[in-house]
Length: 162
Image 1 (cartoon, rainbow, N blue to C red):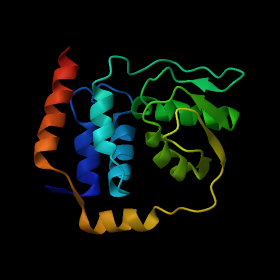
Image 2: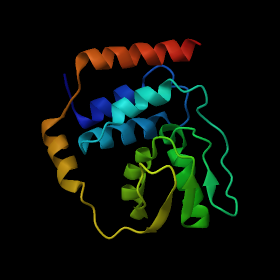
Image 3: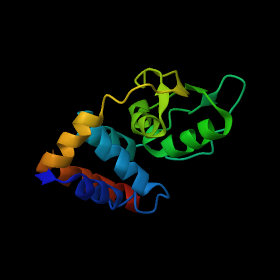
Image 4: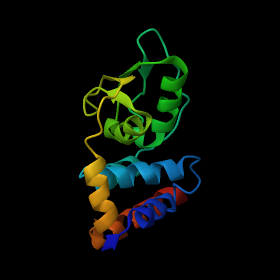
């Protein structure tokens, strides 16, 4: 099935289990951005929805921020707010760090390797290599496997009930 960027973003944000999340719109946007750029945003979202812990209030310490393996699917907006407040930030015990990439590009910030369980966010971003991919997705839509989408929606619903 083919989604426009806006359709996919809104469909993700409306998934059961995300609707109650204060950042559902941002999660939908980031997941769509990742998919548009060729990254497995939906796959990472499915993994994150299976996690028992989705939120906590991360606090900066002398070494940066310990994310305690809580998924960046849910923490990315809080992490970006902390970077805005206190500048460059070293992250530890990161799960699904790729979800920070759309936020750092939007904010014009550099990012270390987001698949490394420890990396930094902050500093200046000097280029946006994703603009062309986003433009193509805007023009052509994003293909999502229908069976995967049905499983994701069922998983999200099951997790929101439990």
